[in-house]
Image (tube, rainbow, N blue to C red; front, side, top):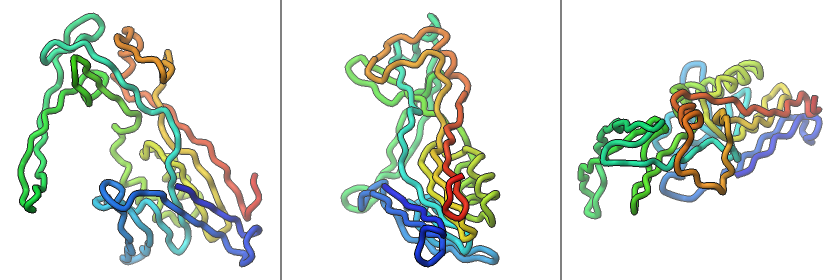
Length: 239
């Protein structure tokens, strides 16, 4: 995806300009729909994924913002030593947290069939792969933060640049670049996201089978640091 924000001093009309161009497939999880949301004191226009209750690409009578995918190393994969419903951690065997989820899955004839998924969770995170004796668990920074939807709403309904920055600073949205523009002439690029505080970072090309105690244990807490680099401009002049 890509986006452009142009300050008033750089546009022929003297207005702030924002263009967003999401590069997404025409289907499946990338299905977006157009939204015009109007209520007392609120009028927003934009788009979001089907089933997503907040606008992700949006403009109001004051501001607009767009998002593109950024490149942050926010995920760690752990290879576990497993024995049945137990896994080894710090040299001891621990039981998985086991839960079940039931989903209504549409069949070829249009009917719905309930199917059950059994989920096993370790200290490091949920098990996402089990095949040929290999069991992998994953942990993604920021997914334990519960107010992503609220932050999107506050960003979209902000009435000034300070209000937008305050909403974005909550850091509840775990990734994505944000490109912003408003009618007062502010434009901003924000590299947004959260990444783990890794004590001993492991190169992405190295597969680690048994993590040391101090490495694995840090996953018990959602320790993250904000990645927030921004270029903020007023009337098109970078400050």
